[in-house]
Length: 78
Image (cartoon, rainbow, N blue to C red; front, side, top):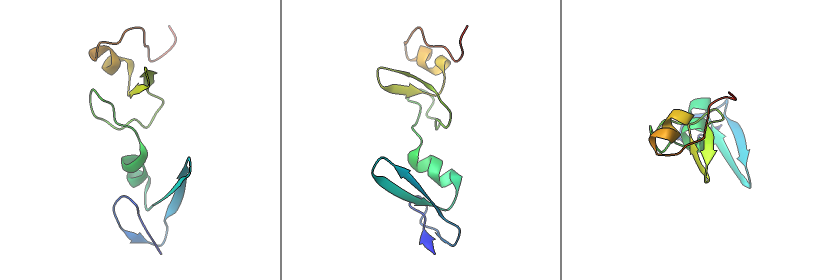
């Protein structure tokens, strides 16, 4: 059995995720998201989709980016 890097659960059905040169072990997708997904700086939700990015800052959506004063970002092509 292996231990989850997020919650510490010792579980027989863990899986590994490799990011760059780091390998992480998880017992659920929920733990993987909590450990690896970026957090929107406006609403603080985990970004598990594409999000929008400007100046190397990732937001969950164009609305949150606009609330932070950014312009020109859209969630879809007009």
